[in-house]
View 1: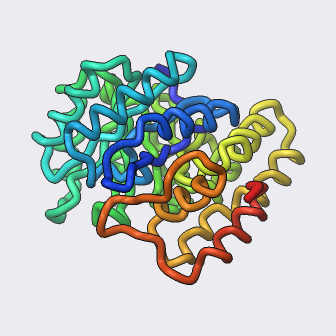
View 2: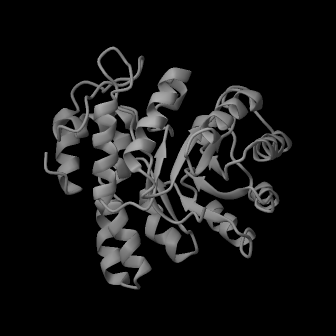
Length: 294
């Protein structure tokens, strides 16, 4: 697959008893596709992947794939506390019609760069689907160093990275060191979207995109057609998306709360996550600034 464009890291709608709400998931997928996104991610961080049982993972993957029906590429988030467990998830994803896997580092023990390299090479060798590295040190406690990324990019089954670290200098190093490879650097921070595209990023994989898919897609599309003035104006709005971090709640809780006001899915998140009390009006005011009609 060719990795480019904007992909929402979709929420996983849950019923009040914390099972996958398949009907609501179909609405999330349709909402994202109607916004013009270029692909979707199932079971990323925003999709609450660490909280999902195997049965819930299967429900989410099959529901999303059935609703997408091949219209855009689908990446499946895979990650656990060991390489072996991650490979189990990767192989399960490969048994479906998914197009690739987005692979996180094991997130319990601290790792050095040698362990980082071993993990991704082992997964790449075991996977029959293309592998996208997921760099999110805020969650995994270790970042993929630029020289490590350069080495991993050479592997024929590693096709790109979602860089959610929010460190623009490091993202630039990824772009520079992997230039000439069949490797896509994808921004993981919508505030850095346009700047990333200008410097060579192939697109973005964004959490907030499942709430404002058209806005995120429009920034990329304006850039892709060479309309930098329009892209910059849209980016000013998209740069507000990461402000959700100031509401005292994890991203899935904020996004699902907004989507619940649109009638797309329930606001339920997996325990012990939750929406911090007292922020509801501020969240809705922020969503309106992004163009969400709530």
